[in-house]
Amino acid sequence: NMATAGGGGKPPSDNGIERVPSFMRDDGGWARTFAWAMAIGFVAIFAFALQAGCRSELLRVFAIASFLAGASLAVGSLIGLLFGIPRVQQVRRDDDAGDGETHIVEGERYVANTNLERLSDWLTGIIVGVSLIQADELATRLNSLAVGFGEAFRGSCGPATGGREIAIGIMAYFAIAGFLFAFLWTRVSLPRL
Image (cartoon, rainbow, N blue to C red; front, side, top):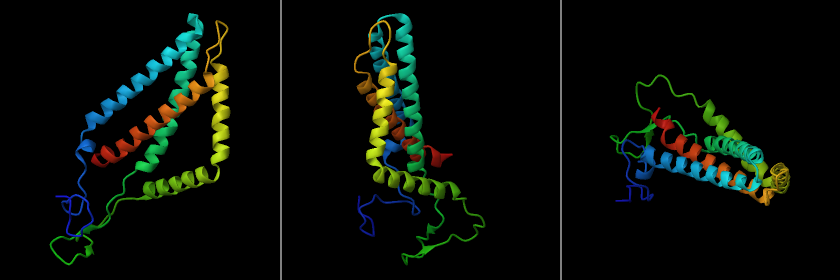
């Protein structure tokens, strides 16, 4: 039954807390998917590095691409963490009253510190706002970064072709994967701690 008393279309809840969908309750499922995604990403990086020709260049190109992947993963994870920090419930619905009003639970003397939530909201707003206003500048800087890494991929044993495109692919793939991992972790696992 997807209907609630209020008709909001959300699944029924217990004690005023929304139920978590089953795919989000399974920590192992999405974590395994993330591990496979990382493995596939690094296999693709290794396949690109094989273009280098000689062993020293292969290791150099793989190391540079892995560094770019790790940095992109870290940036995506940080943004995912900021967007995914859950809110602490400060008030609870008193279902026994039956009046539809929200009441503070008696006997609670302390409430959770919400400074991290406020910081997350503030930084999220800044990131979204600056990204919208400076989208052209952001695209230009990301392209310059990709060109720089593309040049770094070239070696003495034969140039690694398509370096700029590969750098863009690595940045996008690992940033999105990091965002999704951190967002899901903060939504699924962090509230359980």
